[in-house]
Amino acid sequence: MTLGLFALILGGAISAFLLWADRNGRRVHKD
Amino acid sequence: MTTLIKVTFTSTAGEEINGQAHFEPMSELVTLPSRLLELVQRARAAGDGHALVAHEDGYRYPLEPVEVGVYQLDRSRRHRQTLLEQAWKAVTAPTKDQRQQSGRFAHTLSAAALIGASVYVGFSNVWTLIALTDVLCLLGVGAALFLVGTVLSKGD
Image 1: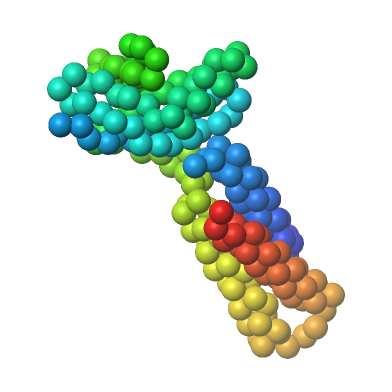
Image 2 (image 1 turned 90 degrees about the vertical axis):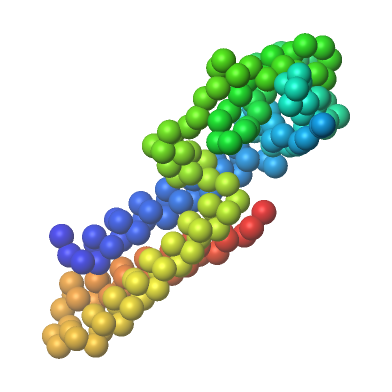
């Protein structure tokens, strides 16, 4: 696996998770 | 003497609302403000399950209804979240401040990816297709993480 592919997979996974957590946090905390 | 105590309303509709309520330390009675009382009545009318807990010294105390708007603090069923529970909640359902910190983390990773791409360009003597793909991937990840960081830092 090349460095670029590794960065793409890791960065993509982190981005997707952070966006999901952001949406979930906004839904749960309405105060 | 009446003091204020933090109260959290949660319902099966997915709501979690925090507020402050009047608390009588002697009788341990909590009187809900009208805003929280409306939420309770609305949840009852809609048939949604709901729960009220009070927070004191890091512990969560379930509130048992005594009369309309007045609840008894149930000290026998106090509960404190463990470190792992707090960490799990912070990651999966972050508060506004935690979301902003996640945004800063994404921006840090974005900067690291861009610096990595710059170093790659600076130290790469032979430009193969793989080297070019690596640099483009790092630049793409840096841009994507920057955008994610801006979304998370929105602040509301």
